[in-house]
Length: 404
Image (cartoon, rainbow, N blue to C red; front, side, top):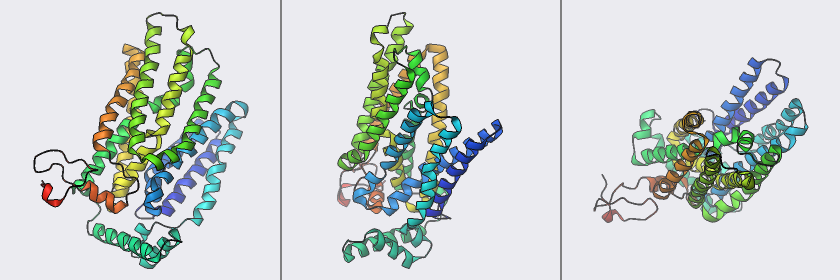
């Protein structure tokens, strides 16, 4: 991302998606399927690291949060499309449907500019100024020049620090960004979503839902799409923090009910009269997930790191997050085999409960702030002169704080 640039890296991400889909369509052996899935997974992993950064550096602070919420809607549309079209078309035709979007994106990427942050970092000041002018066309010349000066100043300050793993721990802002990002992606992956999205139909069967599992999954996908479409409006109105809090609390409650249904089944109770409970609880779960953690977590991570460590920081935190996703699935099966399905589900409910205080006390609301303002906020001291924690979103004068 830092070497090639945001735009070329995004082009490679989309190209890998096209290659993966093409290989899946023509695969004749298991080995080719494995390779195609590896390429696809690599592409997705890169996308969650690069795209929030690219969007954050191109967009105006007033709409940055909204724009970074659109991937939720597109992912939700993809899930719904698979749930709706998958049962009625062949495997090959389904793959051909999925390849349409990346092919279109591959053609449209040429219309986008390179990030002005990257252009300034590479010494292409004139191109960077032209990019900002094009992106902010219609704005006052003074406002455009002020943004150009702000970006240039930020890049020059950060270029003085050589990019290295050590830089992640060199300043208070970097340490805070790393801790918050790792925490958010830990709670995202441990929320239960990797497991639930992979075995949705099996869970409905185990819960003895008296409705076709195909209908249940279609309702599941349709709701994800609906919430995904309203997600950008919610982010624009409330920012990132409030949806994250509501999301974590709602997922905790819905998984508690879902686990309780399995607990009653394990006790031998006839739950046929309550067969809609697991469906409604999972519907509530996916609604709350889509409202906040589904996209806001990645968007916040893309905004917290300083430009000189953004590539390293987002790559590291996303790798840790995906590792936690694998761990969450393995943990579920271990708990399921020893204590039962209900305890496995309740483990995820407990994790979501812990995400509430973490988000409330440690995650800042970055919506509407410039990237430079975010770094200044993260650079606040940990404690004031009375040894009390300094809240990130409160303003303190230099006389009121004691830097330690």
